[in-house]
Image (cartoon, rainbow, N blue to C red; front, side, top):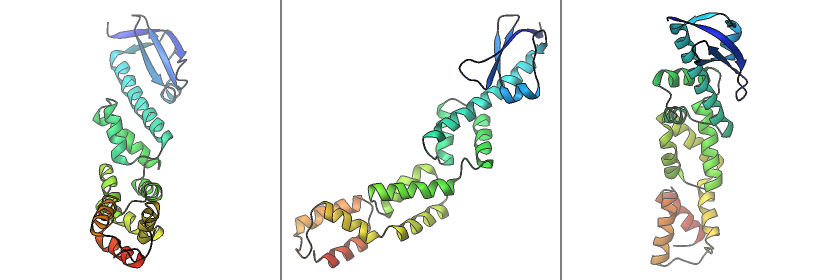
Length: 211
């Protein structure tokens, strides 16, 4: 039978924005509320298998958007991260691409705004240098120009020497007491892992009288 007859229409008890359609062959399909409002379905109506499939695609797209908004409810996301997370939830390429486009058009996804918040949080909380910060940004696949701009701007707000001095103070390094070779190597390795360049480290060492 090419068509199915609708025997029951009800709103989902779990998701209030979804309408559940029951058919005479005991199968069901779901319809997003906005789609249902624009094209209502009633008990007694018949629907083709093609139409049911069309509703299924629209429902999948709605589910992809819902998943995206849940992710955004925790924190901002980069475009690349959102794509990865939606792919992990088994949405197909078309569903993911349409969802990303939908979010970008409505400013829910914006790599520049994400990047600004991301670098500030990392530098403020972890006190890392530019090399480590660039490494942390890598998985988000931001454009090289944007990465450079973000790094340049954030270290105007957070002074590199001041960040290194924070780590020296935390490790109880005293000013004007030169480090021996072993101490200097250990401290330099630590600061290098934190993402600072030797030139900046050396300048702070000199200012603190550690050389």
